[in-house]
Amino acid sequence: MGKMILIEDLKEGMVLAESVVNSFGQTLLNAGCIIGSNHKRILKTWNLTSVSIKSDDDEVENKISSELLKFAEDNLKLRLLWQPKLPAEIDLYNSAILHLATKRQVR
Image 1: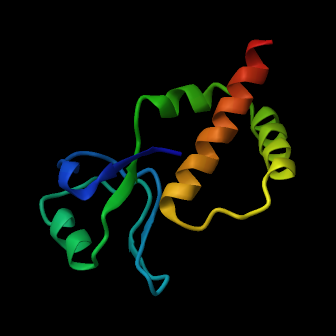
Image 2: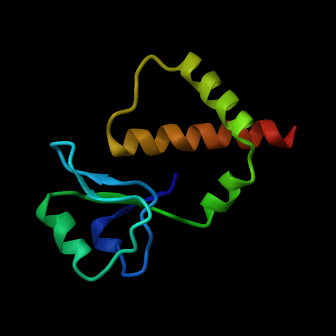
Image 3: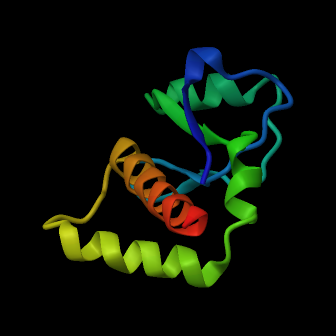
C-alpha cells in the first residue's frame, strides 16, 4: 500500500508502491519501479492522473502482522456491499484495513 499522488507531483527517484495499469489492463510500470525523467510523460500520454508511491506510512504497515491485516480485511469485507475497482477506491479500502489493524493492535 502506498500514498496516492497526482502525476504533476511525481518526482524522479520516487518508488511505485503498486503497478500502473492502463485501461486495457496492460502493465505500464511495475511496482517497485524508480521514477525516472520519462515516466511522467508516459503516464500523461495514457491519460493517467495519479499513481501510488511508497511512503513513510509503508513502514507502519510492515510492523503489523499479516494475521492482523487479514483479520482487519475480513472484518471490513463484512461491512461493505461493493468491491473497490478504481485506484482511489482501492487506496481507501487499503487505508481502512490499515486503520482497523492499527486500532486492533493498540488494544
